[in-house]
Length: 180
Image (cartoon, rainbow, N blue to C red; front, side, top):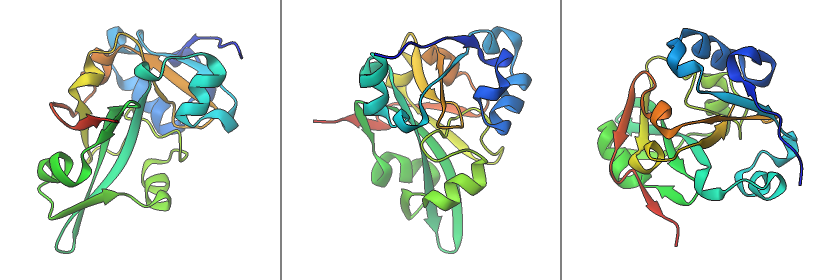
């Protein structure tokens, strides 16, 4: 098991992508003070590998999924935050929230280019201002959630209630379903 060294995220800009650092600095002090960062092995950034290597609970891990909703020629991007033990209801709840005819996971190249973050490390902090941020209601209840830091070489730890209070965050009941 590898050890994690937690630092206040604001004091560790080298552990987050540039848009994440800017967004952290713009948060109210009472929110940003509750967010920690830790360096990890970038090769272990995927949720299951990370949890196993760093002895972290899968139930506390959250994934930020970039979704593209389409209606005619219009494409709407959104981020969905769900627990690692659940699966986002992209074709149902997400699609309806976006008012889209079709919804799917955004192509990796689009997600990376539009967020300025690394694939596998995309986080809801620092997303483009015109994106919707949908948070599964289960995430809001996690005492200390683990999520990407915008880079594969770090993770963020923060209360679920802080994720739910991020600018533009919409807490959605039934955004995800448990993985059987």
